[in-house]
Image 1 (cartoon, rainbow, N blue to C red):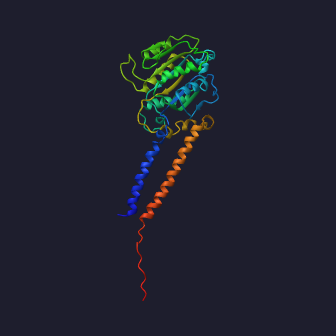
Image 2: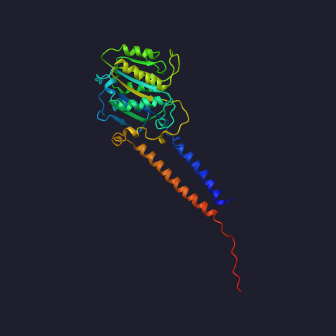
Image 3: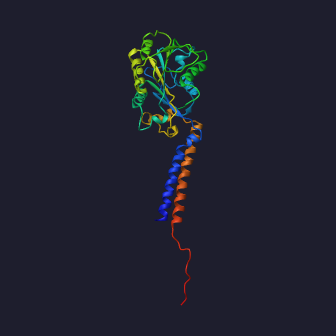
Length: 319
């Protein structure tokens, strides 16, 4: 057997191990598990980005920062907060908390729930205004729906200026006297009973409700909710976000930019990369360059070791 061939097999095994190590680097370096968030409105309403149909923020943010971003950049302060509740184009604000979608799922070729991805992309690209935050860090200590309600209350200086707040029984919201809905039929009745004036807030969560007779996929449930909103004739805006169950996933920061196809023309104007983002990208670039140099070094040493050279040289015999 050629010694160099054996050495090359060893090099391949080493490179394979390096690839797996690099794939896990975000976990080793403490990068959080993330999930996406989408906000859209079929009707025009006040927002700092009303001139941009699609706004994308590529920063990695916490759930607390998500509420601030939704209120400020998403324009929900004009809908939810009492002093600023001046937007007459919104009857219902809907918050839907999913349980499956990770950031990396958006660009994955294999989807566990294709209908959910399809309706999110369709809603994002066809609405009058839409905003996406691909990387929202998941807090394992608190439910996302509870964190969002707390964030809205804390960031509205004069308190919430809503007509009614209701939530589906599959949500976990503690310490608040809110109206509880037991099924999608109850959501329909809630929408039908709305009155003109201030906006209603409805918090919905993926999962089996008390009156549900069967289990639907998250995409089917969300599609039914969007259909209910359209059929009700209400002027609405929707915030979809996800707090997926903890499963083994590829790191979210290695995911492709999920809106590259739909926002390629204006991504440079609507996307931001903060200092942390730049540090992470520079770090990964340095790691890949180091791997290339290591491959060159190992390949050179392998070839040098494989060269068969005599250990002794015979002296020439003089005639």
